[in-house]
Amino acid sequence: MLDFEPDARLVDDSYPVTELPLCQLRLMDDVRFPWLVLIPRRLEVSEVFELEASAQQQLWREATAVGRAMLDALGGDKLNIASLGNVVAQLHVHVVVRRRQDAAWPAPVWGHGQAEAYDLDRLAEMRARILAEVEGLDLASGQ
Image (cartoon, rainbow, N blue to C red; front, side, top):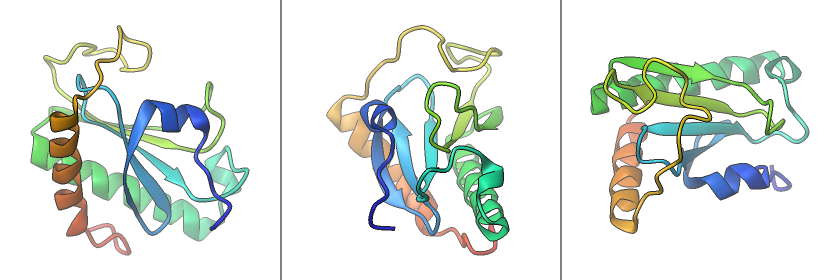
């Protein structure tokens, strides 16, 4: 979709990683949490039910497959997948690997403390790691 643009607040708070079949995959700029955002490339959609049924299924396949791969690769204790949209209405799904010793545990990561930005080396390392994990996924079947 050529006219698709992620909301400016998502752009300001994250880095692009790759394009999945439905979603743009972005890394939130907070080293405290392995935190990804999937943004379906659809115009003027703010709720999951506004997607056609096949896109709803694809969104869930992408979120769960990416989440599982990141949890396995990074060794977390829990995976959080959520779509809130109270601040940014554009439909987007958060995928966060949680650890019992992380800065916000057991509370949600949203609004907890001050984000700690990636430096260029850690950003490059994390992007490469995510790409390596996502590259092998079969996102058509969720494997």
